[in-house]
Image 1: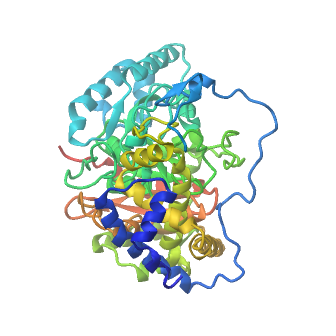
Image 2: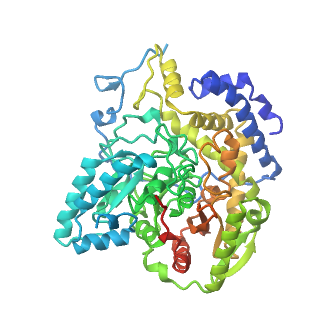
Image 3: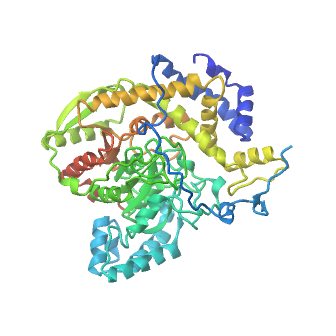
Length: 99
Length: 487
């Protein structure tokens, strides 16, 4: 993990901006270019811990998820599901061109 | 009568309503009027549901007349703005969700309403529950009724301010890394973070799904027990909720605590600097527990120094995934652009606040190709080690005790310029979320400048009963909850 935070340079920020689909303001880019490496630098503390053979823990209490029975239930109607949509047509989301 | 209905507990208000001295409709009107007149000082509410609340109150009055009285019939309650209520705007205090009208109601709100609660309105919070002061809210910042230059905490800071200002006896919040306990502590109140899985998260807008838990912020421990009995339990709509039987938490309050062993983790008490007035208050709590017959024992959580890093990597990773749904297409805010990708990037760029963006960037970095093993997987492995440490500690003691925060209620602006400082301030609260154990925070005194100080008890999985029992016994001896902010 040692030197990886150094990789969070302007190029990495641009890459992340694309990855997370968030357009940053110039001010935010300036802040993030120092704050994110600083925070990741703090995270380096984890490399002190020997985790050889330790299983990752993703959920603190449930060893396995309880599955719901395979019984159909009434969900939201089309109108309800599209209630908060800014632009819609014929019961579908309407979006700008993809290509 | 008018003066007597504020700063009351749930129990007091129930007695008033049962006696017929006041109807629920009258009470609701008094509360709504006072919020409208005075909340400009605190900004605890972001929305009042006047018509909705009055209809609930009238319904409660009809039931009271018929002698049908449940635990919360006619009692006003506020809820954090991340709980969905069908037909009522819910925004998580984010511009991305402004105008969003949910089409279903969260399980917890439904349970409260089934018991007769009157939901007065939605309280302010940090945007998507990311923050500890409400300063990241897209609305205004909430202020602490004990001192208007200070924060009431966060992210459930509007909830704590609404109870502290005496508008409602109870508010329901969420706690992902301390967001119930810290604001309760900053406002001199009681807050409960239940065991992960104890309370349904269905209909709660997600921040970090393996950490988020729902719980009450109230004036005293008895009310916390009342609400815990109501909101707990398995919900088929939340696959992570657990089929554990729900005890009668109120009945457990009077249990004898003689011989209970309270562990003090040396990593908290020896290695972290915290305010000297908090230290003095905690020392007094320990003395009182000794007087009550509890045994005090030093314990160790060896991997505790790594908890903040583990937590923030995992919580931001989960957040980056959960918040991917706000794409400008499916919910409220959409920025007009000529292509799908530009629409998505601009909607998210304009809709999210800076702290939310920072966490999405951090989380996405930790999950990205080439860094996943070194950050996300490593953090998850350390999470297991902290959990195993806690399991070992609970072989030596029944509960653990430590402060809620390293500092007194913070001045507004104090943490905002330095995000790392903001994250490190959660050191006392996030461990309970990281490992999923329950925790209760409750008032244990005041600083010389009359700012509330809180203490926290953490228990073994599903042992909220013992925590509430211990907190209640302490409360009986001290009665800090009787103190009210002066106006």
